[in-house]
Length: 259
Image 1 (spheres, one colour):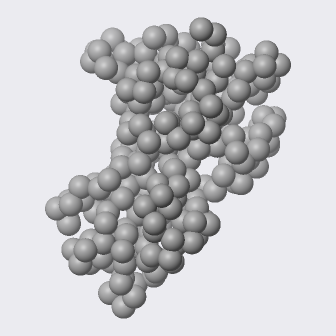
Image 2: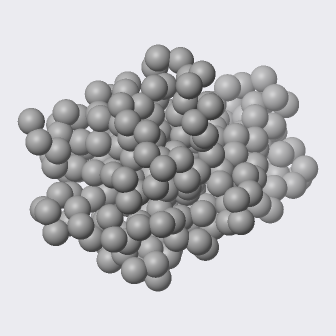
């Protein structure tokens, strides 16, 4: 069975911060010329899908909003399927989560103590404060369902840096509330399965290209996709050598030029 769908993670695969990864644009262009479907699957909930379109176009990669499955978008689709339209949500996160949840009709609240909250949704939040933690704690302890877009502890930034990810913020909320969240993003399979259904492609016809063993490779293997690890992000060759079987990719490449 031939490969029809190529799914790329973003941070550490297509770019690091504002830096495009070597041969990213050329690789995407070549695959599309060959008639392959190309999609992008990211746990990063910071940006809207429109913002990701602008970023990739600025790097010479033509794309449309429907090419992206973000953890924020997947969270919104999940909540919509649960009848959450019109429900109150307190968000610990950035523009991506706010916009996607508003699009599905959820009511974003600022102060759960005054307005109440049915849900707390958390992801990366670079303006995270003790006050936000306190409000999330109040909402969850008073019955709000706790949902995390992802639990990535870190993500790759420009200049070769590794910086704290949304998982660090989710962990703070889980620690003070004693409540573990429902996690939507990788390595949970929801966003991947949603993407496959949207593309009408079976797992055996798809390959996932990522930079993390514990999210990208793990979710690919759980769903039954082919998996490729690229060493331009957070994972090095030593980590691959010591990885458990469930996180071992089919192939390891140094850059996308090797794909």
